[in-house]
View 1: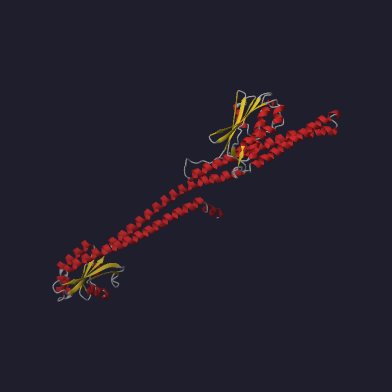
View 2: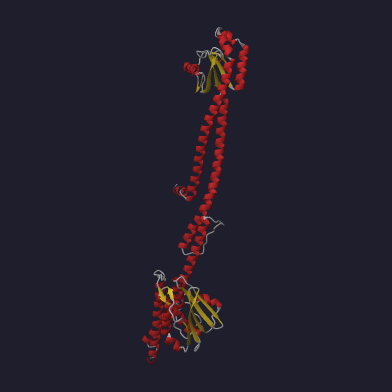
Length: 484
């Protein structure tokens, strides 16, 4: 029972029941409205028809009534010619006629069920007919019929004297009206059933098309919670909101999968980077403590331990820098700074490293200030990392290039060196965390593989991108900043 309630409370059943209920309610309202309008119209139409027939019969009965006032009832019943005429008119008109005197006594009736009976129209009905000239009502005529019938009474008036000589009451047999309503009710229920079944099927298909993707999303979400990001939604070729939701869901899944992959790579990389210096430090420390390393080499191994400790410290510091950079919005303040001055400061700070590598520097920096939008310290860090990386991998005694140029309202910075050509397949990987090029090309073995990743992160925070090319031993990094 509980499971049944849960199933009926699902989105599928709710939508199905709501749609079917609305269709059923609409059918009932339309049926009631149509029944009421058509019934009233049929009654009025039938009343006019019966009234016209009663009017004709009253004219035909005028002579009969006038003569009948002086004859006995038995003599009136023997007037076969008029009786045949009245009976024929009743059959053709599908009504029963009662020809009455001014007091409502029935002198002649075409209804064979009343043969041999003394019948009198209720006094109230007769009075209305005599006073108003005509009247209609729906009753059993004072218990004359077992069911109510529609009747119209018309006064028979002498056109010469304008004297009312009697009345003619036309009583509907109800056969045509009843058959019409029976047919209508049967047709209505049959049509309602067909429409309701079609609505059920259409609503079921529509609800299933809407609920199925949602159920798949629920299942996919459970899989994601378990760490499985390989599942994807099927959009079923739809371009509506469900299709857009499925596409967005798949995009989210791709992002989550990429984030998870990066997280695992990050953990693997950081584990590797931390393991190497820590293993070295632990191994050499144990060697010093247990006497495995001779005393004359202790200083040498202590220097190795100190170097590995510093490298471990740099790695942790760089990781903290990356974490802090991702929470910064350098464009929020809208501040500008002189990019030329920042580039000159980087050259001065890099002078010792450049001199130690016996490198020449070709600086193409304008003398006047060039103001750009961004954070001065972060962009200075970008230029420093790029120039440091260029100096690290440049050939001994070669030249470095640091240039700044204005192009279409943007300041473009270029850092170039002469060294080994970087394979095209490796260029997109240069800005990944902990990625290192072939160490045989670098004189500095102490890098942690975060310098270029920090460059990319800072520029992304500035809504900019960095480009790299490497051909014929010339490797160039370039990026641009907005001057507006």
